[in-house]
Length: 320
Image 1 (tube, rainbow, N blue to C red):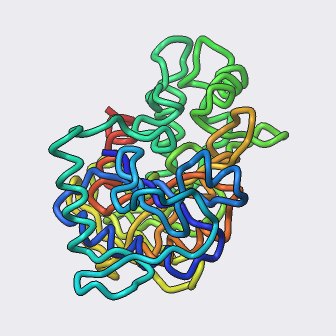
Image 2: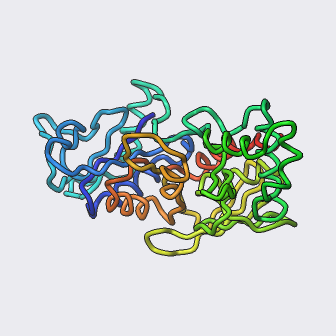
Image 3: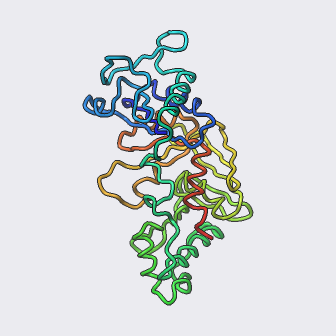
C-alpha cells in the first residue's frame, strides 16, 4: 500500500494528520508513509493536493468531495461528529485504508525506500578480486575497535591484489568511503567520524552509524545486542533503541524513522545523497514538521518494525 501526505511547507495540520495516520496503521508495520512538500499551484494540480494537508492512498484521495479542485489553501475535514477539523480522525483514516485494501491490495515499495541498499543491489561485496575479504576486514575492525584499519593491515586480505586498488573499487561501488588521502571514512553501516547515531555493542566497542537504518542493522550483522543513542534533529530530544537481532525496544515508544534523500539529478554515494537525511524522530508529527521545512529532501516515515526489517535486510549478511 502506498500512502502519501501532501502539504505546503510549515503546514500546522500536516503533523496532526501524520500522527493520526500512524495510529491508524497500528498493526500494519510494513506500510511506509511518503511525505511530499508542495510549493506551487502546478505541483498541487499534478500531485492531486486538494488543500493542505491531503492524504493519498494508492494515489487516490479518499476524502475528496465531488468537484473539489486542487489547491494550496488550508484544507478542512469533517470529524466523526460533523465538526470542522484540520485532519481526518484516526477512525476515518483507518476505514479509508481498509476500503483501499479491499479494492487494490498492496502496491510496490516506494522508490525512496531502498530495502537492499545501493539502489537494490545490496551491500554484500563481490567475492572476486579481494573485494569481500577486504570489505569484511574493514567491518570487523569497526566492530572490534570502533575505528577503521589502516591500509597496511589490509594488504594480507587483499593479496594477491593491490590493496589500494581494492579499496578504490569498493569506494567506487559505494561499499565504503575514502578521503583524498586514501583513508577510510565510512564502511556502511559504520562511520569513522562522529554522527548523530552512537551505537554501543554488548561487550565491545562503541561505534558511530552512518544513519538510523544503518544503526538498526548492526545487531543482526554482528550477532550482538546493541544500544543506539540518537536525537530528534528538530527538537534535540534523546532517542534510545535497544536491538537484539530482530527485536527492539524504543524510547520514547512513539519514535519513528524518517528515510529521505536529496532531490538531485545525478546519483552519488549514499553518504552524500541520503545518510544525513535518515534519522530517528520522537513522533511521526515531528518527522512531518521537519520534512515540511526541507522541501529539498524527498522521502517518508517508516514505523519501528519496518525500519528494523530494512536495516536487517541490508546489513544482516555482511559478515556471513
